[in-house]
Image (cartoon, rainbow over all chains, first blue to last red; front, top):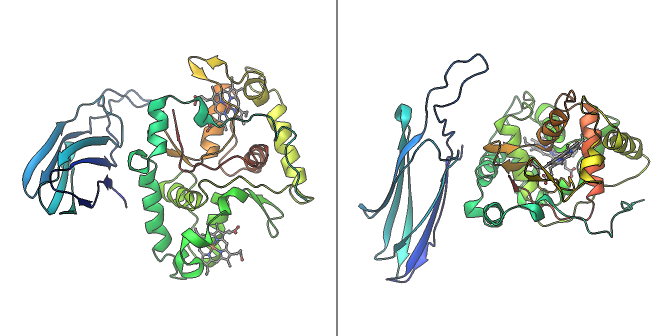
Length: 106
Length: 242
């Protein structure tokens, strides 16, 4: 099933600033809620996101319980060379999702 | 015979028109629309084989972009064998059980939401086109009757909020005209995608009315009336709402 939606231009000019958008499916359970029987629902959130460009980290973010489910993140980077953008989300309970996508720079 | 609602030429407004800029921005761009996660799931389900027949939706219907275009604008639609209108979700489950020989998908479950979002998306931008004829009229009128009937502990009808008081606020939220233009949709309050019937449950519970079960005839009739009332308005599936 779809866990991520990642959007950025597949082709860019060298030096161009490109916008990257990424959504990941995740409940983002805050840890502050209780069931109807009063039991605490344990926290289950994404804690960290990184984006690598040909292996070099170009963006990262730390997530907290107040962030909505299925978090959407948008940032920009500079198209330097053709290669691969990699996206990694990690979180509670061993959550880890990695996606890669190619970019062609001319 | 195709009859248009009496209010067809009055200014009707989608729930979209009442939203904040930030929420509109989510709907305006697929890359920011969380509902697209469900659409993507729906596409995978469409192409996956299932059931005793071991057939995919795509094996019979081909590419949904062509075969399902406009379908969601016509639902709920009259089903000759059921002798009553069926919702899009029920129509999908008819194919699940009869054509795929598989178990029906649960209402409000992830798979049925994903498939209906994917099918609905193929009609995005098209006008809602419910047919009122001898077959559908009695059911549509039953839905209209429910819409106008005071009910629940608060003794309120849908019309009292959505026709008499739209544009005003209820606990800070704008009261809309209740046009079901974007279902299934991503509702921020739900933190997920839900069907029109889930939205209607919320309004029923809000007036302290016992809600119908998912798929109940009363719900489908109400859905049919609301969709007909929105005839000609643009389908936005998968929309975003607050």
